[in-house]
Image 1 (cartoon, rainbow, N blue to C red):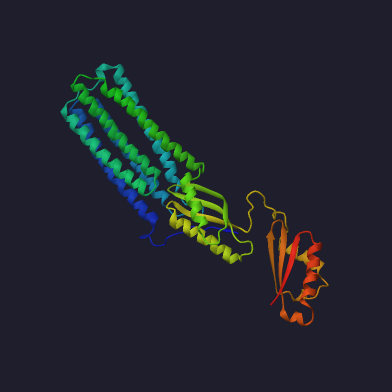
Image 2: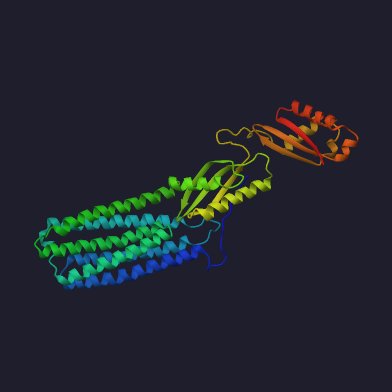
Length: 391
C-alpha cells in the first residue's frame, strides 16, 4: 500500500512558491540596480583617475548583471507549477543555475589572479591612482557587502543555493574593491606590490567558495540525501504518529529548495486498508508541517517487516487462491453462503477470514463447520489457517 500527493495552492496570494519568487526577484533586482550604478561609476572614475584596476573592477560589477539576469530567469522558471513533462516541478532549474553561477565565480577568480600576476611581472602596470579612486572603491565595498548580506538573508530564508551563489558573486565584487583599495593605499606608501599579492589570495578564496557551491549542486543532481540530523528529525516525527510501529527504507533527496521523502512504515498486520491509508496520510502531513524543507512524502504501508526478506512475494493473488479454495472445499457445508472473505498475507503464508450467515448454525454445529475448513487449510500448502465467524 503506497501513495503520494503533489500539494498545490490555487490562490496565488497565499501560494508560497509565488511569494518566494517575488522575494527572490526583488532581492535580485535591487542588486542588479546597484551593480549597474557601481559599474558605470567605477569605469568613469577609473578613466579620470588613471586607475586600470578600478576600470577592471567596474567591468566586474557590470558582469554581475549577467548573473543577476540568470538568477531572475532561473527563479521564474523554477517556480512554475508541475506539468506533464516535469511532474516533480522545475526546482532543479535553480540547481543548474547554481552550477552556472559557481563556474562564473571560478572565471572571476581566474581573471583576478591572472590580472594580478600580470601586474607583478610588469611593474609599469602597477596602480598609480589618487584619492578619487579610493573613495569609489570604498563606496563599492560598503554597498556590495550590504547587498551580500541582504541576498544571503533571503537565501537562508528561502533555502536557495542559487541566491547564496549570487550573494557570493556580490561579495567577490566587494572583495575585488578591497584589493583596489589596498592597492591604492599601498601605492601611496610605496608598497606597489601589495594589491597584486592580495588579489591572488582573494582569487584562491573565491575559487574555493565557487567549488563548494558547484559540488553541493552536483550532489543534489545525483540525488544525495539530506544531512544526518535532518534525517533523524524526519525519523523521530514519523515514529511519533499513532499506529506506526517501526519504519525502514527511509530515503530523502533534494529538489531545489525542497526535499522529497520516501518511507516504508510498519503497522498492525490486520488493520483495514482505510486505517493504513489514514496512518500514511498522518505521516505525510506531519512531515510537511514539521520539517521545513519537506514538500512531498511517499508512504508505503507494510503489515510486516520486509526490509531484509519479503516472504510473501511469491504467493498467488486472490483469484488463484480463491480457485484453489473452491476446488478444495466443494462439499463443505456453508460454502455457497460465504458472505465475506478476507486474505492476510503474512510471514510467507495466506490466512483466510470467512464470514458465514448466523442461520447456518440452525442446521450445523459451529465446531463441525470450523473443523471442515481447518482440514482444507491443512491440505493447501499456501495457507496457514482458515478462521470462520458467523454474523
